[in-house]
Length: 334
Image 1 (cartoon, rainbow, N blue to C red):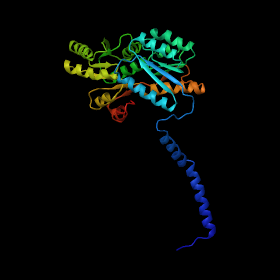
Image 2 (image 1 turned 45 degrees about the vertical axis):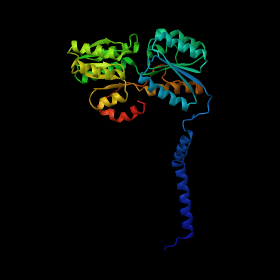
Image 3 (image 1 turned 180 degrees about the horizontal axis):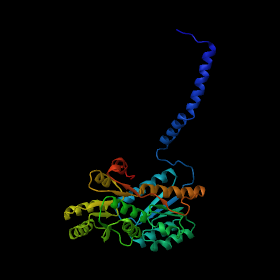
Image 4 (image 1 turned 90 degrees about the vertical axis):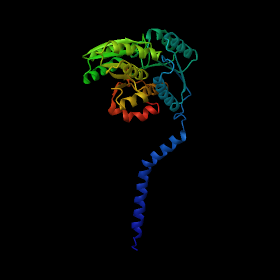
């Protein structure tokens, strides 16, 4: 067996010591970070005060889109040591009353949607007067700054509609039916107007009662039966896409069904070709960023957006991208 001089052994030991020290500054740190993350097990990652944030939306009962928004908000709330309160009402006046209730509770921050901004203006003003910071989310980007909100988190509905019109052009469509399931929702009107702005074909708006899927299916089916020139149906929410698919089958129509928003069902139907494309506004990100930005404002006086909305979309999702996103939709984060 070969023998090494004493000086060589010492030099080797020194080199190993330096090498290990280098590893501890990278891999060791990563291992320590991973250990801390595992130990947290859903507990707060900060030691800031236990603030309470309230989110009040215009969601109706059973709308899976808002389950995804809540999922993001609650995840950020856990990380930021926030007591998160969620309430909703599809009726604008009732939603305004929920905002008033949050103000009365003296919450530390409010996140609110402005689907029907005129009905919410006074309630948001009361929150501002009480010194409660407000962030708007999902709808109301045009009114957010004027109402005094810190920022708006969501997609620009007009821009999203324009993206749909451009995608319909690429697909060679000639006549599109834009299905509005909530009358008076300014965001829905902006989406369909955006489609009409960039689509080289014709766009016709169809107003339906979104609280009754049988009525939605019947209305779309009747329109497709009456007008065979319609070769694209655009729904404004993921739950309505499958209903449009059923209406198409009832009418014997060859129209392509496309939709705003994404969920597990939509991802599956994109993969098998039942749907043409979807427009994802990343609702998980809307909930997560709204809570996180309120926390940053409370903790550090931070603000994002520079007076403009923080955009979370639109992202056009086709069959090619659907498979990669399917895992996320199943866990409720896309």
